[in-house]
Length: 184
Image (cartoon, rainbow, N blue to C red):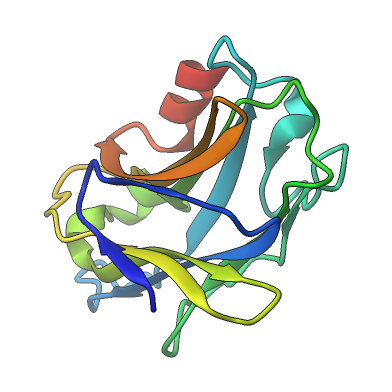
């Protein structure tokens, strides 16, 4: 049975291979523009920075160099129930240099389309064990991100050679660039 986390809570992840599902629904936009949300994965070293440019996994770079993190591809509409975008993580392949994996969702062309996460609802991140399809943890973001255009949903981090998941729910208003500045 899945553990539902609150913001800031942490949980051990013992599955060696799992899928991180990210989901959301958008409100009708008063701007007339459709929403396009994108999941990005920042793979960080012990210094809290990207190990290399190729350790940013997103719709234009679907695999980490060690193929331990694989993005399933961009969902342009977010229509339907369940996961809108998925990332498969195989901890048995992950480089020893990796200390943290951050999962960020941004709104594509948010400024031009006058969109923000205040117009997005039912956002969540969950981890599903690939061996048995059991949902291990789920975090439903319930904050009102009325000015933010990018939100870190959650992160995996290594502590004492064990992997843990933390429900983050932290937004920035500068889009993906703010997270690039933070982690580069």
